[in-house]
Structure formats: structure tokens, C-alpha cells
Image (cartoon, rainbow, N blue to C red; front, side, top):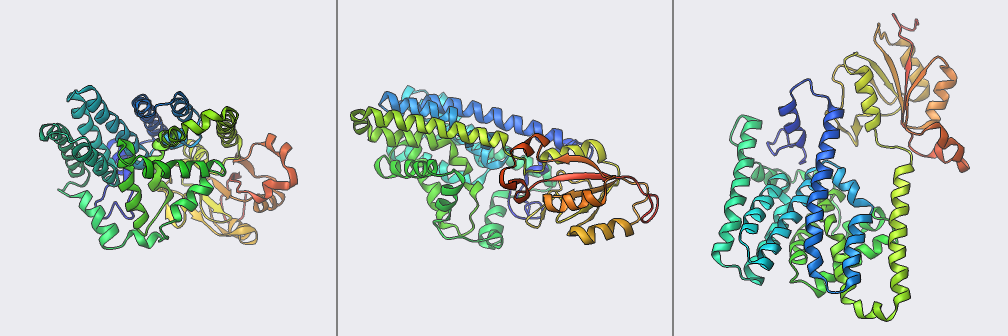
Length: 439
């Protein structure tokens, strides 16, 4: 979603949900349904793309790596279940790329119709995917030398998808707007995106090294770059090159901008392995070690992600929605409110009728609670650190814990008191007060 996209007519995602659902929709249930949709779409597109990509490698173990990769790489299910334009557009693009390959290998133009429609919607969902589409069209026109007739088979359904996006934007804004141009104008020409931070060209490699988790991240980075040097005419590789190069050049960078190409990681690793196939065949013990290491590390990371304390607030949002949504509650926050991220508000989940007091910490927190007339409304106290929470519970034994991001059983594994140094979200409810300071 573009910065200030609602005001600049460049289509925020939540606008679609709000338009369809109206003012009484349930944000938690809606978010769950959207994540299920994104996950199922990602699974379907990735399954098709996986079957197609097996044709691009020669060795049995390279094909095995593709299958193991899509089944076990830890960040793929996370990204697919993360409802975002990056994830959905990436899933659609790779399905469209698979259709283009099927049209080429089976000499069937009907696949081109599907390709055009799918990549058209991929562009509508996320405009930056146009760089990958450009690479795919380059492969069709200059590498495989598709006839003009075949290009028309791609163009017509793609134009239909773009026209559908234009009509949808008109429905959103009650005016004819060019959201693609607005996105380019506001973020690049006017430099609005740069106000959210600029980074050097190598920043994506730094983020990838840490976020994908070394030493696995080193293998992923090498596996992505090596085919770009050795197999630049491959349909997948040539589609990724312009996307990656343009994003390295653009000053404003965010890790999520690389989400669309995450689906390519297993195939790029397999292409790299296929090049060194003869070397690995001579050293079967090394090959077996690397495969086992690959599987063990990804399974271990998935286990950690499943068991680690919850630092995201979405379970907390669900509890607040179910218990307090229309209650006009007063929320006291030791630091920032749970709906604020780096100075930006998450209005999708935020109750509009709450009264918030932020950055109180311990001394100011007690004073605010005593001197604020909360009437007969619920009184909630929110913490994101255990230190402030423990001081509060000592002074307010009457407070009832409503939510904790760390379950009680995990305190049995609080070695070296690590919980006190981590983010821990918690919410308490105080007895209602009819006047200032009087329970």
C-alpha cells in the first residue's frame, strides 16, 4: 500500500474490504478470511508453478530440491498467509508465468489467454509486478520469438484485467482515476516514498542475510544470484532480473518489496544445484549432508516460529473486539497504544469510540488512572513490557488480566530471565469507576 494512498487515489487494500463490508464489519473475522484466501491462492498457484518448474532442471536431485523447498522452506507459508498486495500479486504472477511456459512447451495458445488474464490481475494488485511482467514479455518476444498473434493472445485478457481494475477504482472513489499513474507520480516523481526512509542499493542483501536467518540465508542469496549469471535466458531468471535491478536502484526500500519473488527461491536454488550437479554426484556424502541440513534447519525455524511468544497484536485485537468493541472504554498505555506502529495508526482494527492515554509508564500511569473520570466505561491498561506490568500488578491487585502474549507455562523456561527483556503484550481490566478515583 502506498504512503497516504487513500488520499492520493492509489488504492489502499482495506478500502476494498470497507467498501464491501460496510460500517459494521468484523475486522478480526474479515482479516482471518482474507488470510485464508491469500494462503489458499498461494498454495494453488505455487503447486501449479512447482509442477511446471520441474521441467527446467535435469537432475533428479535438483527436482527433489524443488519439491522439498516448496514443502519445507519456512517463510513461504508465512508470506502466503500474510494478506498483502505483494503476496497475492507474486502468487498470481508465477501462475501466469507457468501458463506462458505451458503454452510454449505444449504449443497451446489457450494457455496464453490464461497467462494474460492472470498477469493482468497481478499487475492490478501490485504495480511493481510490472517489472517481472516486462521480463516475461522479453522472454516471449526476444528469446522464444513468439509471433505477433501469440502476443495478442496475452495482451487482450491482460487489458481486460486492467480495465476491470479501472472500473473497480471508479467504484471505490466515485471518480475516474488512474491509480497506476498516481502511484508513480506520488511515490517516485514527488518523492513521497523517500520520506519513509532511503537505503543504499545493498540494503536488500543485508535484510535478507538477517531475516532469512544465516547460514541458510547465505545459501538463498547465492542461489538467487548464481542463475542470473549462468542461466539468464531461463524464463524465471529473466523475469526476476528487471524486478530486482529496479528495486536495487530505487532509494526507498522495504523488505516486503521482495515478497513477490520469494516463490522463486526453491527453483533458483535448484538451478544452482543443477549447474554443480556433477560435483555433488562425486561427493554423495556432501550432498546428503546439505539436504539434511536444509531440511533440519527449516523444520527447526518453523518450530521456533510456532512456539515463540506472540509479539504481534492480532490476538489482542480479537479479544478487544469481542469484549469491548462498542463499550467506549478508556485505555491507559504504559508506552504507545497497540494500534500504533512507527507513528502510523492501524485503523482497520482500532475501535473508534475508545479514549486513549499513552506514554504514561509507571508513575504517570497511576496518576492518570486516579485522576481520569472514566464514568461507567471499562477501564483497560495495556503494556508491552513485563517490567511496567509487574509494577502495576503489585499496586493494583484488583486488576484482572484479559490478555497475555506469553502463556504461563512458558515461564517454566524463563532461563536467565529472558522474558523480562522481550516484548510482552498484556492487557488488564480495572473495576469500573463512577467518578474520579472512586471504585
